[in-house]
Amino acid sequence: MATPGELALLHAVLEPDELSHIKRLLGSWSLLSDLSFSDLILVVPVSEDDEAQSGQLVVLGQIRPSNRSTRLHQDLVGESTTGEGWAIAREALARGEIVRGEIEGISPAGPIPSEAIPVRYGQRVLGVIVRLGREEARPAVSSPERTYLEAFDRLAAMVAESAFPFAEADVGGEESPRVGDGVVVVDEEGRVEFASPNAMNAFHRMGVYSVPDGRRLSDLGIEESAVEWALTTARPVVEEVERRPDIIVLLHCIPLVAHGSVSGAVILVRDVTDVRRLDRLLLSKDAAIREVHHRVKNNLQTISSLLRLQARRVPAKAGREALHEAERRVRSIAIVHEILSREPGDQVSFDEIVAALVQMAEDSVVGQGRVHIEVTGDLGDLPADVATPLAVTVAELLQNAVQHAFTPERRPHRPGRSGKRHPEDQARPSGQVTVDLRHGVHGLAIEVRDDGVGLPKGFDIERTNSLGLSIVRDLVVSQLDGTIEMKRVPRIEGGGTLVSIEVPTGPRR
Ligand SMILES: Nc1ncnc2c1ncn2[C@@H]1O[C@H](COP(=O)(O)OP(=O)(O)OP(=O)(O)O)[C@@H](O)[C@H]1O
Ligand SMILES: [Mg+2]
Image 1 (cartoon, rainbow, N blue to C red):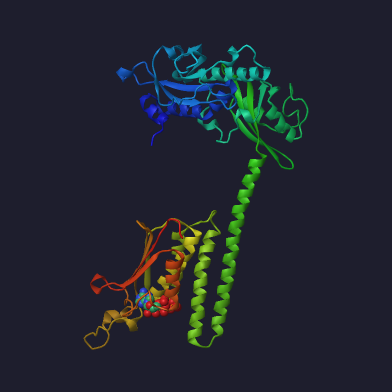
Image 2: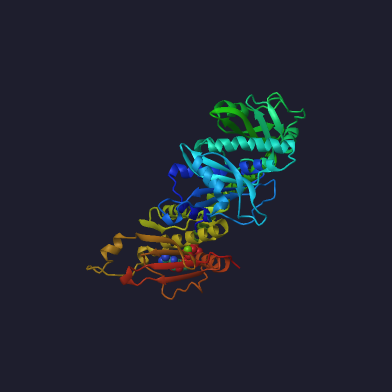
């Protein structure tokens, strides 16, 4: 659904680059709001083609200061403004200059002393920022407040000159600090004119206790190049300054530009030590989980090799085969952990698992004829606790298909002309297996189908006590709360066996 701001945009006439200028402004104007202690409203003119609405302004954005209480409790975004109350906005739009006066009709407390700042982009005035409530109109304004307000005035002039917000490439990440985090204002030489209490706290944590006024950050022992860069290039610069052992402070320098030359900079300062520490913890937690999966996989592979070695020493064929089967089952679980060890999080790409299982099943029929296994559809990423039992299930079903479906001796006897086997049957202990993966209405749907001999007569998965399908039944029905159905496909439909599994995706019991 479109936001009111997006709807309002439909009425505005903005070229794509003008639109991105507006979006950048909306992305960075919390600075303006906080420095001016004011609610800001961005209005743009409504399309002239819309005759009934000509001369109207529509509100594209609204922001409240984080360091003062708001004067505007209603949400104006998306509303259009007519009437005399907004005259200063229309005037700023027409003249392209900052206009001071009053905004009427939006507060029951009466007219609010306000300021309308034209938002220029290149030659064109795109809209107007209305700043509600001029703090400087108050009789007693403290000195830090005055510093903020002066910085705001310089930024407001930049907005009117098309110098703020900065060009696309210069915009920092989302975690740019806010005024409340800490502010330093420097002159064009980089000398500190003002540092807010929170900025001082950040400096203290870096071990800097001297009075910063009139000195450069580098003179104070803060090694940074951001301020100098911002002052020489007239572009914003973000830098993280690290102080051993583990204090990290983010500096976001915004140069103040007047008529094309830099007259100073506002530096937003934020102690990000805790944030970074959390990031690192999260990163290492992710890495630890991956490492655990890696080790589980290695252990499973060791178990599977032990089983393989043991199988070689068992003289009885039945025992040997049982050990081989066990070895294969362990390997199919190892595949899931192998994939989990490569990706962060507990989601695992099931398609990748299926590809590995298919490879494993195909490898197991070497020398017994050709079986072609095809995978259609996909299930995307699945949580590990669903993917693991499903992987074992698919492995069993593929194994059954390659093991039982295409054995020539169990092929139905179709005598050829000589009374021997039908030539086609003789030539072909080979066939086609299809694995279909889908997100169905009831959850995950998996179908494994082969065109082989079909299930033995009277076979019933509910009642079988053979190991492979008992495991499958237990995993699907008991563990995943799903259903499984196995049936012979009639010969006219190609013959063979069809196994259909459905597993609900919602929360399980
Ligand atoms: N795709 C299939 N085509 C034909 N017969 C099948 C198929 N799948 C299973 N069967 C039959 O169902 C029986 C039971 O299968 P199940 O997987 O439970 O045991 P198994 O494969 O014989 O032994 P294991 O425990 O090693 O898997 C098989 O012996 C086979 O006769
Ligand atoms: Mg089996």
